[in-house]
Image (cartoon, rainbow, N blue to C red; front, side, top):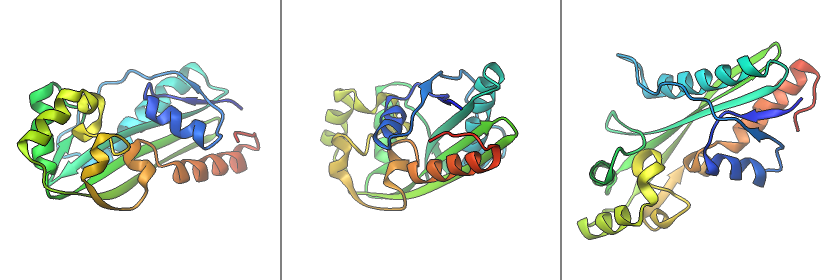
Amino acid sequence: MPLILASASPRRSELLRNAAIPFTVEPAHVPEQPAAHETPVDYAQRLARDKARAVFARHPESAVLGADTVVVVDQHLLEKPTDQADAARMLRLLSGRTHQVITGVCLVAPHFEQTEAEITQVVFSPLSEREIAAYVASGEPMDKAGAYAIQGMASRWVERIEGCYFNVVGLPVPRVYRMLRAAEATTGRALL
């Protein structure tokens, strides 16, 4: 049974390739707007589920993996920045503080659906305005939740993490692997 990744994220694709998990890519285009009183975990899980179900509707004999990553600091939801000023605002919020990276993941296959979330705590060192301006000018933060890439230049500001590193990159690979094995056990069809 083929696995389809319902995401255009090059980082998610790279993580699956590195884990030797075979897949194809078909991005899902669903509205990304939190509902009133929706927690960040519920929001990330709902978007992952919406993405997986949207692609599964077109490929009902496949397994579809949906994912969505958000960053949370002091109840502020930080998604992808809208522009450079927004990216700088997010980095100022993260500076010298602990934040959470939440990835909702949903796997849908024939007679199988499972939605989970991974939460990783990330501690940033204090950032100067000069560091923020230079990082924003690099362009790296512009398509990343929370306006940074832990695997890129921002790695120099990460003092420590608690939880899954791959989750911060964009996909909690060990959790996804467990979900794929559960889907194989339920459906009797190979995914790995």
